[in-house]
Length: 399
Image (cartoon, rainbow, N blue to C red; front, side, top):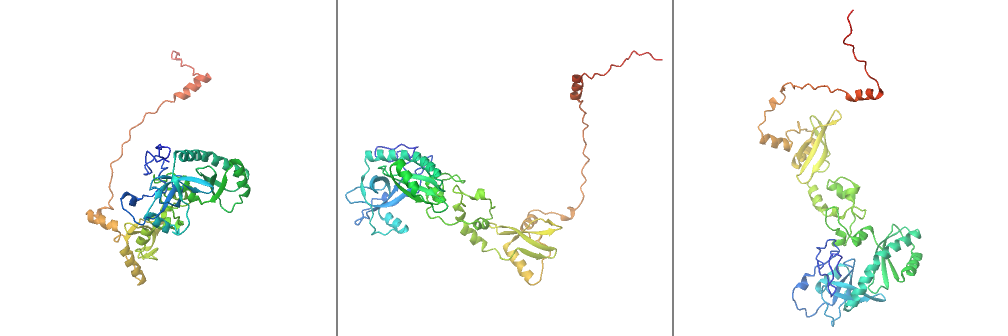
């Protein structure tokens, strides 16, 4: 099955992007895997008969036994055994790569697995399309029923089997929910077998999918399967502002990508000296303002009459030398000569600092006289009121 932007061909395979991740809506890029070993014509005398099958474009994956009489390979749409019926999915991995995937997910090879029944027929594909068409309306109605029962839960996704006999309802809740009455309502309303599965907020974002603030698809819906806890200390180590709205993802939790570069930042911070928040100098005590991890600089400033002075950029080795001097009871004269930007400015420009304090007289600024505008609005108001000035009698005789 393809997504809405690429039509399905006769055998059910996507005719557009072919699950290569170039869809407009990203529907074919959910937790996809590339079976690179199947691209080579390698004959395996003892072929591994277990395959990995993806359902609903990667929403759920499971392992199934591939019988020898079926010529099913990676990318084929197959019909498999399900609870009380059948389901239709796509083979995402086969051969030795499936063995590695089972080892990663801690699934024993001798475990009894359901098997593939047949290559999906046109009738199976049509039944699957009808089941997918029911999911949206079922989710909306199920949310309304749970709200009427005043249950503190949210239905995030609904997945129908291809035979429309069973549906899995994925929900999120803060605590434990007694949904025994809810299951009876669902079974009476939809006339199916109901399976309730509780997931977290991050798993819900992975099921729904979407685009992150980086412009790419969400990591949880494309490749991330192991969710690790993320704390605000990861943002502090990376000198990021603690802004909850910017650091939170679509799931409402802290973004998983905060942990991606954390180890690199920790390695860089290990080179910085500890207990270097204050440094003693002859002109006062300097306090640490910030650190530039990439350039290896530490910025200090002095407190002068309640105001912060200019920032002095000191290298790591320079700060270590000052700390050792303070331990011996010695203090540097000033941080200006130790400032790396001050030194580079001195080297690039031959400035004469004796002339800096001289007063430079600027020519007097000539301002143009502006003509006063007559207040015509006042005269118009007086005319409207009927206040008219008496005309002067120029022909008045002199006494």
